[in-house]
Length: 464
Image (cartoon, rainbow, N blue to C red; front, top):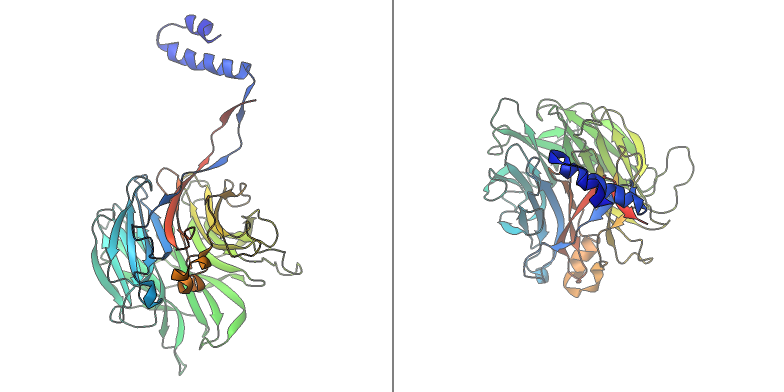
């Protein structure tokens, strides 16, 4: 059949005729097009170096916004587990081929809590907690992570926690504005004792120097920032949670999550907006902003735990995972779709979220559905094609489960971070592919692994 059609077509149309003939033959043989989108997970790749006895946890990952496959990640490393959790450093990892190979980059002044963010051009920024003399520092790179300058001290005050670095491109300026949010103890106006809450320091010269911290306060409760987002207009949105009384001595029965905006590069902040109040065991983890045309600047907040809507009775069974979304820059929020399709009782932990250039929302998380005892976990991924309303069937990423408590070499690490850290890495690159960086304990030791994930939206041929 193909030969007969091709013989009738001459000249420039011959190639098109070949494709047409092949298609007609395919359908004549009973072939159809499977139009259902599909999550395609690549082969996992080991990222960590040769010293397999060294645990590594709490990875952060960022992707170059314009160069496909260019990634930079970082994680906490325990060079000598015999000395306990106090002896740590931070290792960086750079890939220029979409995660197939990685180059190690040391950050000797860092101790814990690394966070990575790409800026304009090839600029990359890494924030972390350092030693006593420099408790919060930032490194910067102008060549996509090949070489680094710094460290630059952001604040000399002790007691900081969970720094999150973000880059804001300034129109007409060759430099990025670099904002670092963190938790910090500071004086409270009108009160004798200090309070602990969110603060932001800014740099107007691309991370070379930083201003003093601006405290973000609206009450005297203990508050912890956990993520931030930058909208296309340059508006900076910071997220934090209050969880205890002023001295941190008494946990709140219902923690609350807040969003606060800055339209002037971190100099001033809006009145905080309540995102949600914890009614069951919900915990906010990660934020992403949509830069696609359809839902431009939509904010997504990934929350795990049992979800109980006010006035609807007891929490639903299981420990789920869902999204909250905002279409007005964080001023109002509503519940979106449920991400996990695990059976009741399965635990979903530490979700990471990213949105690719096509507006596909990707979520990765640690999941215990394969182990009723919840001693072991796997990494799962799902995606939404309709702005978070519904999600595709969950896809298992890890071929081997992680059971972190099995090795005596990392008992202390596994007890502190039962799911490999307080966050994990997920980024969407310039081609729309998702990349996951996670702490994997299949060997008994937390080691970094990565995998790429593509959400295939194109119809695929299927022969019945």
